[in-house]
Picture 1 (cartoon, rainbow, N blue to C red):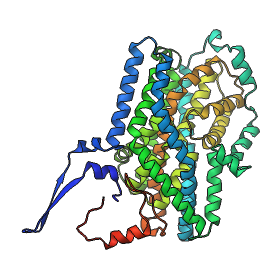
Picture 2 (picture 1 turned 45 degrees about the horizontal axis):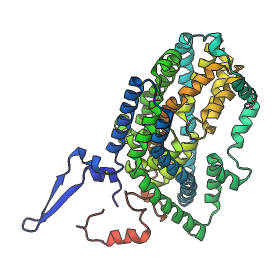
Picture 3 (picture 1 turned 60 degrees about the horizontal axis):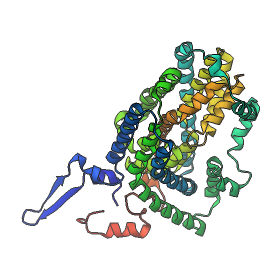
Picture 4 (picture 1 turned 45 degrees about the vertical axis):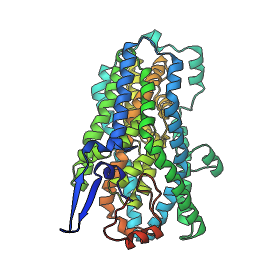
Length: 486
């Protein structure tokens, strides 16, 4: 199976052998040929652009789109997203178990390096994201954010009751809740409730303790291959799913409300994310790999475009794994770094927290001091790690951080909630890009290659099969040199 199905589709060749001259002629297909291949990069990008164009065009020309129409249009996208979400938990569990098994097969220094460098990279980029976001927010955006009118700040009775009975505003309680999310009190409950951080921790422990070559490990590999068959089909459906996730959401877009109430929140958030994705992480990437980060970013577009459409790092993880594989990331690294990054590497969310908390403060006529900004940095770091990789999961943590620096919830929080779905898509794309940059940097730091991997079957490499088993590898090695891999 070709290691890069999209590239294989785009550059598919027609080979003819001429016995009289012994020459093989290769004719490349045109670049646009991949648009005919289901689930290809070009199809996903085109679907996203069409969804945005139609959604914005309709929302700006029609006074009001019927809610029933939007609900019906969301059905294909929501069904596709549910399918991806259903595959994420078993994929995380199996990928981490197999990754830890591979680390046990590595030399102790290589396994230790992978763990230290991966966690260290994610913590470093999260701190950098929060640091530059906080500095830019305090110096550039906070002075420009207007104070809202009393009528806008007022809460209705229902919202006031909800916010007053919301999460604790004590810093110590927030920190305890964050750390408790890593260890399940009940493993079965954690699986049933999709507590992904707890599942990841459990999978790491199981992967370390399970017997190499035993029946449990063989069962894990078999389950992963089944999941990969399902994911292969879902990835082929990605253009349809992305289109029907983006377009109905943009039909709800009220440009006038956004421009009037949230211009500075949007500007601060998107500018911080742009700085991070175009300057901070590329600088780290090029410092270690000596390669063009922007070329790599474009090659990884299927993952972050899908992430923008789904607004969920977890739901996009199967696509992210495929993209990492297509870019030559060693199997041990991608199995370990991407599931871990999906759950703890939330650079986009880390950038967003200081901006939104400052926005809530300034609309109340309050200016945060240096001590409050330090507290925001601390809580944003921990909260971004603990944020579940599902749409708008950061809203509850926003309330926690705001309460911790003495801010009350006002009517402006409702405005933030109304636009969160839009910013969440950008946060998700930033998180996914960070995971993919991390894979290449960690590959360079650890020196781990696919040659170091054990004989555990790899993930599916193509668009229609699961990963080859050892028997299939032998068949490939024994095949005639002139035979083609499909």
